Length: 333
Image (cartoon, rainbow, N blue to C red; front, top):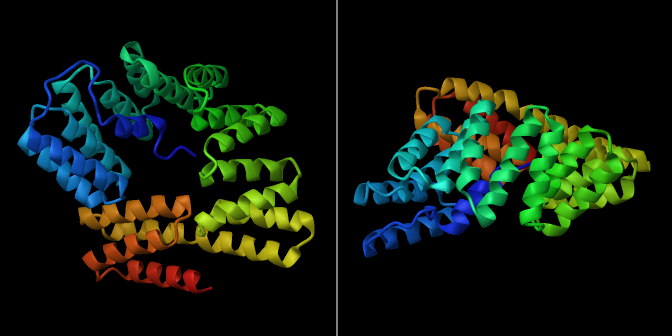
């Protein structure tokens, strides 16, 4: 539900400014950083990665290039490389709070939750303002993963004390309440999250799924159809929409969505097999990891494009051919 994470979004919004003042970059480096930010926000990951490398080559003593490079590598699923870049940024600027937050997130994604807690706490000691809210928010997520729901709730509440508009913190509270069976409170938090980020399909999905669980199929259908309008290959949305339609008595439509959910889930083992086949080709493997993430988030055309790019690099892979065939059949059905 929180793929990018508020910490990463804050790094991008703040332009990777270090917590302590540092000499301003020269004009050429400033121009490169501006291009990098534009490329990233436009979704041009390859260009952003190349520009981050250009910043590093031009001014290797500054942390910004390493932080941006790590942000892109993380999105491409290259977590160890992202971690290495962030540790170099922190070697150069130990008090760089944004770099510390991103390092904690990358460590967390690798399953090293206790280490992530330590990094978040270290960031929290130096963070101020919005970054402090980000640190509390991420602490809430780690505690939830560890099953420490009381501590998770405190993290989310502390984040909201500092910024009541954080949709991700409201959604974190929603998850805690759901896990504890407090569905009415969960629903209130889910509505708050959706109100703060009305165009975000993730919060529509959370609200729709919860409404299915609470046996309110009519409202659930509205939210879940909105998810699929933005992300037509979202298997979870298809599944819950199918359940809602069945509960309302629309059997044919419900079964269609349940069938589509199953078809989408069958792509996962093909992706895994393809990753094994291309494991020695780093670029193709990175593209397949990106495709997996895009598929999990429900993007159709972008997922196919990533797989097509991987196949262009590894045309001899039979699994990639089967995967593309299955995707094309889904797209045409």
